[in-house]
Length: 114
Length: 113
Image (cartoon, rainbow over all chains, first blue to last red):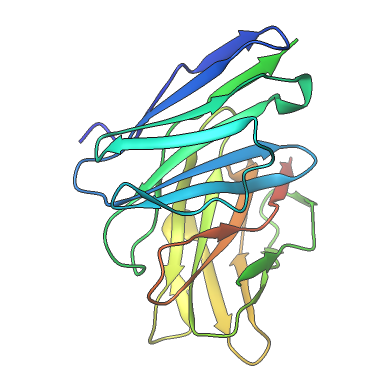
């Protein structure tokens, strides 16, 4: 398996623009997580899905952030409009059924908002 | 809700010295515990995990961790570190029966010659 695939790897955008980050989880995994990593706050859980349904979005910082999982093999995290403080590395991770298993991470998307 | 505390943001150590990275968790139910490592400009990869049974868990690259339920801790140790162990280490907790995985803020291990 190719692992969790995120795109793009790097994104530079201007303040106010819409940004869409994409994630393809490992086939057969039924949970998907979006995390944000910054120097100040470390690794924060933004939202997670179970069987394509959002379960907990309490970590989503503002209404500017939204996430979808239209099917088991694809998820998006959208920021509209983007702001410089959104600059961070965004990770997607997937996990098979059952909490005994670990999550598998993608390589991340480094977002820079100028 | 579960939470994880990694008190040390950075741990400097000399090569071949022992190291311990601390992790404490909070949860009202039983948990599963994980340690991940992140090398520069890479994603996170699993070092080891505690699910049940023996409280001493061995992982990759010579690392081990000990689960202490009474102290709600899961400290990571290595008896002799290498330069290549320089990385960021994250402790994570998952409540049994739930998929949500919560991470600590990470500890940067800096190994110098």
